[in-house]
Image 1: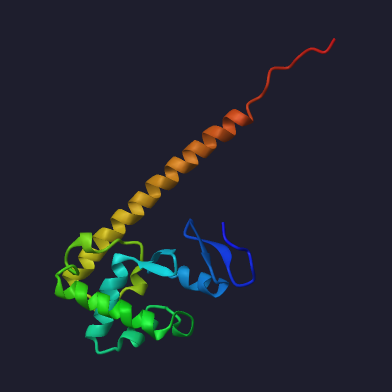
Image 2: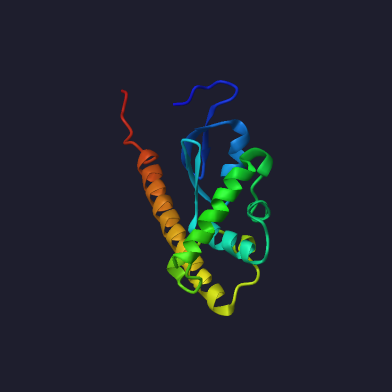
Length: 164
């Protein structure tokens, strides 16, 4: 549990509970964020793909970071530069295979991904997106089924007792 001072509070974003400065809460709602711990942001696979694309278009690390919806006034240029360097390192190491569906996690909506994907890259992204949405749909069906079952058993009519 966090120290519930004005500066630090417990924040729950995407089902993840963490302690943060309240101004960070909006940043953690970004689709490219998977988690946050000890002041470190865990980015999705899609983030590094999109970040690298933006850098390839000639954007600076800070411009690319900002274009993905992050506020530099809150997160800082150093964080943007680190993310940009990491994206370029991943590209050099061959970890950003744009035509492999496994390179995407699919949790980021298409409109937030770079618009200039090749047909092969878009197909890979859409396969990953489809897998993500199918998994989410199955989890939702399971949850609703279990919830309906609990609801029906808790509201089942109890046998009448004769008080006379």
